[in-house]
Every structure is written in C-alpha cells, then in structure tokens.
Length: 122
Image 1 (cartoon, helix red, strand yellow):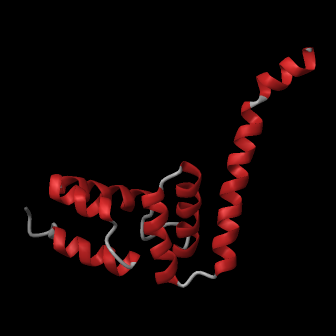
Image 2 (tube, rainbow, N blue to C red; image 1 turned 90 degrees about the vertical axis):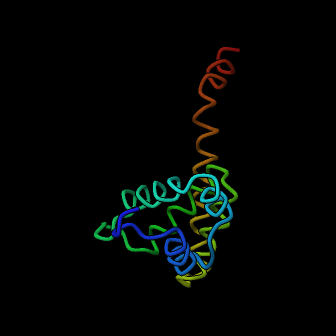
Image 3 (cartoon, helix red, strand yellow; image 1 turned 30 degrees about the horizontal axis):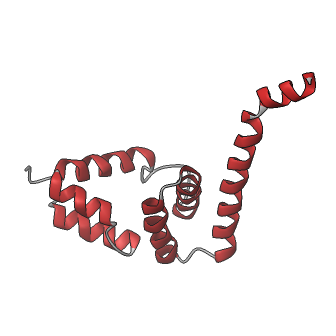
C-alpha cells in the first residue's frame, strides 16, 4: 500500500465521522476484499466531488431518495445516519421520501401504457 493511501481503519474512522457509524456491508466488504472499500471511496468522490455544484444536505437528500426508490435498506439506514450527522430538518427528509414515492408511482403509471392502450381498444 502506498504512503498516500489511507488504511482501512482510517477510512472507517472517516466514514464513521461522516455517517455516524460504518455501515455493516462496508465492514464485511473490507474483510473479504479491501479493494472494494477503496473502489467505493473512488466512486463516492466521482459522484460527489468536494467542488461539486450541490451542497452536502442536497446530496444527502438525493442519495436517500434514490436509495428509498431503489429499495436499498442498507443504504437507507446508512444515509439516515448522515441525515442525523448533518441535522437535516425532518420536513426536508420527509419531502425527499415523498418525492421518491411519487417517482415510483409515476413509474408504475408510465409502464402501464400498453395496458391503457389495451383497455382503450376493449
């Protein structure tokens, strides 16, 4: 490992600081293949660069809404921790949840196009 690369323990300390704790899947990944942890960090830096256009609160709400919509309980749990660390107002978190719910409802309606056409022809 190069001198520039942080240790997994250092990475975990930073994650715990940011998220309130280290998510269990990340801990397990490190035990199986530490390179997964580093790849995860690289991906996070790509998706959420420090010089990005969005602030941390907005990024967190977007990530949380996507995790909810994708059905990722581990991500929802992890990012709920980030919500606590950032002290995001409950009203904002609930609005993100409502947006995720609406996106999924819209998906169902948009996927029903063939069904609607069949009903119109009946």
